[in-house]
Length: 127
Image 1 (cartoon, helix red, strand yellow):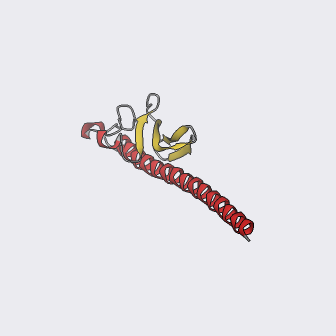
Image 2: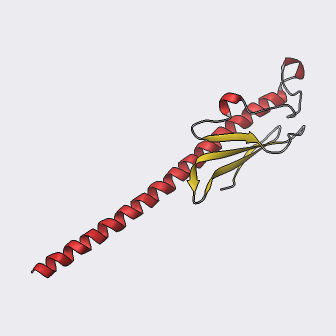
Image 3: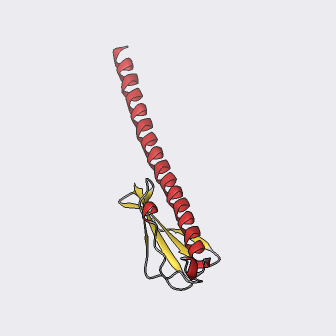
């Protein structure tokens, strides 16, 4: 009877250990996915601000149908979700903003790129 109970205890410990490892992996995957979604949302907001700048006349502090001169607002350059910066040089008709999240996806941080044109804002997941 003693060996049977010992075997059941060992089996129970193994099952609980496997359940804990699976739970940690699911939690990590959920955190990465949530951070990626939050960074994408922030980039859509920044893309919308860039389009507002594009459409606003230069006399009113806008771009006058150009993205040249637009910068990420200081208050939005770094949030709880991640850090945001312009990638490359903005042209009259295109702008790319890259967001780097706070969560790690393996060895790399969550990263999303946002291409902004006068009519579209498109996010692309990098990592």
